[in-house]
Length: 605
Image (cartoon, rainbow, N blue to C red; front, side, top):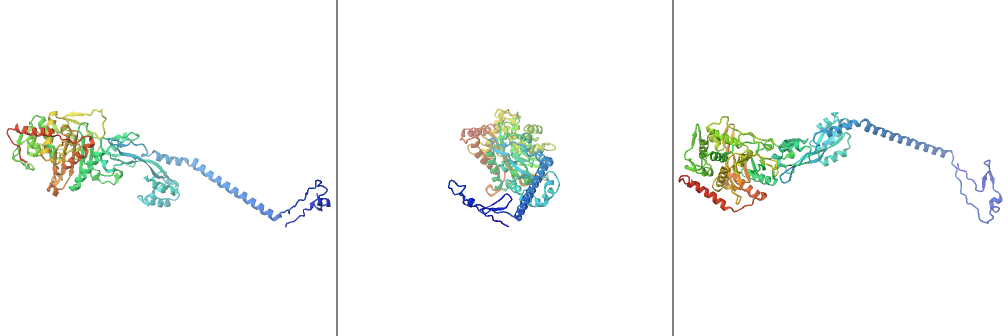
């Protein structure tokens, strides 16, 4: 109820209303200044008991709400204390477990001789779980499988229900995957920062560089052999490879494989002055960034692990042995008219001249018969010792573990001496071959091959295996083979290439297989002062119309060397020159040899 009070009334001390006096009503007695003191009072509102009660109820509710909020905040605080203090040890233990696992350590880069990165480490995030803290494993497995399609839902669910404090869910996430998983907000899922190995050039350098495990442990190539040195350092490992020459070699070998429908190939470039391997290619190759999906044939290193009968390139070693031992002179020769019969075997020439051939001619025309005569005059013991001195009878020492063991005769008899003289009955790796060839052309010193770049002032271990004079004679013979013999298709104009072709049938189940051959070419340039030995080998090439059906080393591998030398020469500061004087001297050398050979004339080609 509302009571209205007349402003002209007053309440007395007893709370009773009394009427104002005339004076009060007019205000005349107390307004001597003549100012109007009349106040227009509004009505006073007085609240009854109902309204007062409503206010009290509202006040009570506010107090209750405040208490509820306070209790809620208190509960949250208690939970935070529990998580940080009481359960902190559990989380710390899980994090510590992740931190202590391999894969998080620094690993040095691998670079080529010019500093181009061949292997490096990139930061990535990996997903792990504390399965005890995952509230709904079914939901987590379902959502994670959408983001990680390579993982099955059953696999994820098993891990999330394992109850383990630490379990890997996926290593090396992409940034998008990490963001998507993070947005799920699932308790118990955590990320660990790791290092992932990355190979910018992929398959190009795979067999040399190798690859690592998911925990950054080296498993192949220099990644494996230099694992301890690479771990825990920021210093790069500088290889002797030149990625530019590596690319040229791989491109030319791939083209030859495609043209001749071959199943594989290998190639090497070897610095004869310091023993550095400048290029090492094995085809087919594989992507080391996805090494787990590579097939065995692609991962097999044909350049260092594979051993093969090399065929006629071995005739260079036989000639060097006979010359260096003084068994023959360069002007000597042999009658190659008749095939050589040993038991049930008959040794013939591929394209017989059926006459006497000088030593240069034996190399030029690749005479098996003439080479056998040289080897038999030297004898089995000298042949074994000479090949051993060249490192061809034992595994090569090199900077990777993928090294093949040469195949030698169980009993080195006369027939073995004969066939080994022209590259059959002994199997070696391309690495062994180029190292030995380097000693033939560099003045006679066998040097330790290296896949790691040497310093300019480093002393290279070397062993003399032939005299400088013999080395010079072999270089002249190699140039004559390119000018007049089976190596003519390797003649890169202006680069003075010398070399020798080789063709050998492959062995399967203890028997030689016809039309399954290794075709190769072993060369050096510039032959007047060699800097590099170059080698190309094509595995099981098929003859084509352009080669008249032939698939021998001179037709298949020699052109690879020609294109390789033409392309790599300028990159290594070897410019083509018109050196007719040098070739004229070599030609005159052949004429002089003929004149000293007792009047025998050169066989017609």
